[in-house]
Image (cartoon, rainbow, N blue to C red; front, side):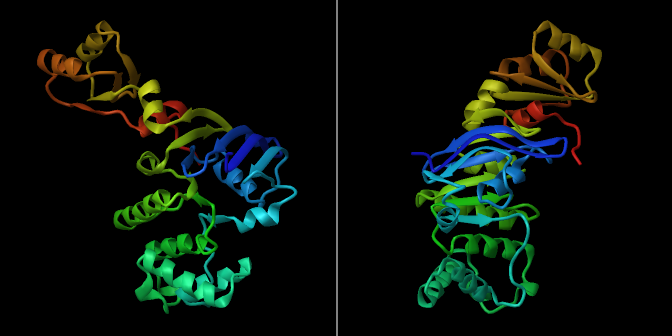
Length: 302
């Protein structure tokens, strides 16, 4: 049975269809990604999943329970790490965890033991008595994630958990999330980092304008929709363009740069650099970012 089932989910704000008929399911033990540009409907969807935002239409069930009838039981079994910092500034690092455990009626002694375990897991034990105001952004995100695990949830919901972090903090959180996956925890993740999604997600959907564009395994989607390799050509002249036309390539023309999507680009790359252009050409593996931009466009979203 799926941990989470979403069917024809809808949410509108006036004339804006923020979520426009989303349907997907998350299986036990997998990390499922919800990707999309700003305004695609990701956060609205996440907030409907744990009852914060009421939906206009559609069906939601978690652990086989109806969210309208069993919201209290569902909340007891999920952990949520939101985008915004909601730590209590008046409490120490450790007491943020112990205090949060009271929402789940966890006995004090058990809560203290659980807090110490999580502080150790996220390498926060040396900051246990610090106030929140002295923590860096990376430390706060680690504490937010630790807090989401206080109740030992069956489903962990992460809304852009590493936004704004430095590379070291991001890598540490990825390592910890991978360890939680190995322990069998089910994770629902929204992120703007394509590397994060490629590394963590077993399956994902890409959403835009409240609708699902594609769904599947990251590597399979990239191979199917983009190819195996991408040839980037800077400042292409007419000679280069004529060459690519003769080769009948799939080309995305960005003006000062061409992207050529290939299933196997070695032979074409050698031919191009030998016979046409020796500089400004780069052959690299195709990635999730190529697929994301191809589907959602390259215009800046506000």
